[in-house]
Length: 218
Image (cartoon, rainbow, N blue to C red):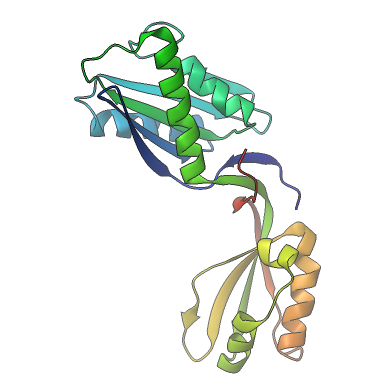
């Protein structure tokens, strides 16, 4: 399934201990500089007693805006290696902070580069890699029997992977929001019509960029 850009799937946190130093990495998808700044402020507040809070971000569908800081570590040993990991994986619209609590053992230039690079890579794996694509929101109201048929329907893998289901609302009917990748929209409409014998029509909503999990790990 085609996507506009590659990013991380969700906010995640990992931790490594290297030569008695703790490296706590927090990563989060972000769409704007305002989101990035708020995220950095949140981490700095949470870990205000840390030795370093090393930040990095990439923004823009084509990775137009990039920035990192060493935050007091020797120049080029922390922020730039993190940014290099993000760039090498082609990831954008995300922010990351590696928080370090110094353990009393100096790692040296090479050791710091490896520690911060490994921390970034581990956080990316924990979050998962996602594609961001244009989805169209749809809303439908189903009879309970049709809803049961819908949720038990064996969708083809490409269609299943291109749908994001909202939480159902149970009243006299079951109201359900579906966000569909533009490439499968007609297929979803046809399947819903078949399941309900033409009794349910999808009401189209707005288009928005949404993230979906990719099966790659690089």
